[in-house]
Amino acid sequence: MSERRFNMAGRILALVLLLGAALVAQADVFRPAYLELRETGADSYDVLWKVPAMGEDRRLSVYVRFPAGTETLGDPTVAVIDGAWVERYAVRREGGLVGETISIDGNAVGVTDVIARVERLDGSSQVERLALQSPEFEVREPAGKGEIAWSYLVLGVEHILGGIDHLLFVLALLLVVSGSWRIVATITAFTVAHSITLVAATVGLVNMPGPPVEAIIALSIVFVSAEVIHGRNGKPGITARAPWVVAFSVGLLHGLGFAGALAEVGLPQSAIPVALLMFNVGVEIGQLLFVGAVLLVVAVVRRLSVSNYDWVTGAAAYAIGSVAAFWTIERTLSFWS
Image (cartoon, rainbow, N blue to C red; front, side):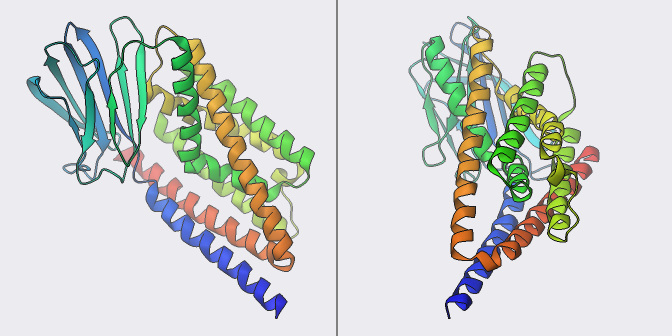
């Protein structure tokens, strides 16, 4: 009876992984909306509002609501760029927007996150990731370096924990690698690699278009998932023999992905080194939290259902690989959309 219960627990866990993978594949459609307010003069701002497009003539129903007394100057320009509906226009408000609340509403609020950025005339900026439950923020006075550091630290943590493709790659690595020191070496190699390309791309030393990078990242997850399955069949590949080599190589690509996300938010001109450093630290903190959570789950599964662990690992690898294969095809097709 006890063994039957454990067998059932293993199958239920695998089913949860497969269902979660299906939801992850669907969730990739909903990328964050992005609002940028660039101060251009006394009481006036240029507005960039970008939301996920649903084809060439449809978009998510998410809208910016400015405080009373804000007037739009001229007609907005609209274009669909890289799968996003992009609006540009200018606004003016007597007394400016400092101390005022800007909100986001519409039918799609709660479906997609919103990143908001305010760029001031003095080069300082304010960055907010708006909570789905209350998508609004107050435009503040220029922040000191301490506040900038904290904002980008939090942004880094939120980005990695919301970056499902990056997390699935780390998860696939953990399914291959065993032994404490090998895990530490592998995660360290991945961290060093994506830190190098994040900094290099941010300061302009490396420049690669986003869509191919995202497609190759998805393909790398397919590769490591296949390595998990080969290892279970008694044919360990390079990821099992030298996981730090694979982690470092692929980590260089993931760093370009992080840089693309950071480029959308931008860096405050008055504190670029601080913001870049703290964003990277935030990414590492989020990554370590995820690794710790995965290792805890693995320990619990092994303790409760040792006989089913290999079966659960295989199911997880197939689920991760299937989602990543879908992403690879989807992102490759986006080259021509």
